Every structure is written in C-alpha cells, then in structure tokens.
Length: 156
Image 1 (cartoon, rainbow, N blue to C red):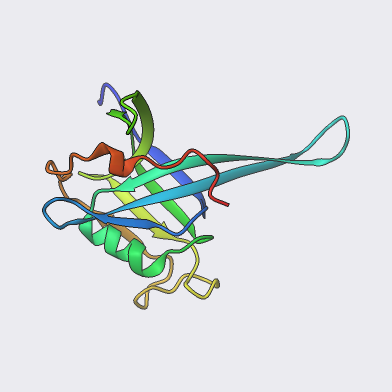
Image 2: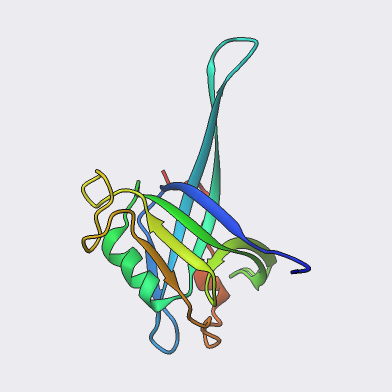
C-alpha cells in the first residue's frame, strides 16, 4: 500500500486561451488557467451564490500540449488529472516567490475534453469523450521558471 498520494482531479472551464511554449530542446509545454465553480442558495436571503477557484495547470508533455494547442480555447470544458507541485522562483525584481500548480508530466497525467470544438457533445477522432493518457518524462532542460509565472489576475 502506498504511503502517500499526490493526485488532483478537476473539471472546469478554461479562463483564457492556452499558452503554448517550447522547452530548450524544442518540446512543447502548455499553460492553462482553469476555473472551477460551485453555486448554492443562501439560506438567509434565498439568493443564488457562486464561488470560483482558479487553478494553474502546466502540461510538460509534447503530445498533450499539441492537443491543447489544436483543440482547446477559452471556455473549453475539460477534465484533468495531475499532481500538485509547488516551486520557488525569483521574479524580475529579484523577489523570491512560490507558486503551486497542477502538473501533468511524468505519469498519470490525464486530459479529457468534455465538449467538442463546436460546443456540442465530444467528438475527437471519431471517439466520444476522448481521454488522452501520456507517459513522458518531464523535461529536465526546462529551467526558466519566469516563463511559467502566470499573472495572478483573473483572465476574464
């Protein structure tokens, strides 16, 4: 039995178009801003309340980054499975900062598109509800942590 588990599963909508970058050895990586929302009815006022959480997603996988680049855009609904990763970096002003991201990298990274490019039911390569599992080692040559710094503002 495993002594620990680091697994994140999220369903949400992209708050901005994906950002596609290349590592130093030419492999693609993708950065996503994913919104998850919950809503409820306030017991006191009867009003509908909403709460949105924003998640930074980084895909260190050339194949998945290609799918993201070709098929996802702002508003796309996706399901992802990855791992939480916190890293330390120094910003342009020399200030050390920390960021926590959901990373799809070495193993157990899953991306499922929940709507089609046209907005209807899923249709990708003749399959409904496509699921893409990729096992690819994280690029050890990618060292520019400033490239992964996503602005803290909500992308709407």
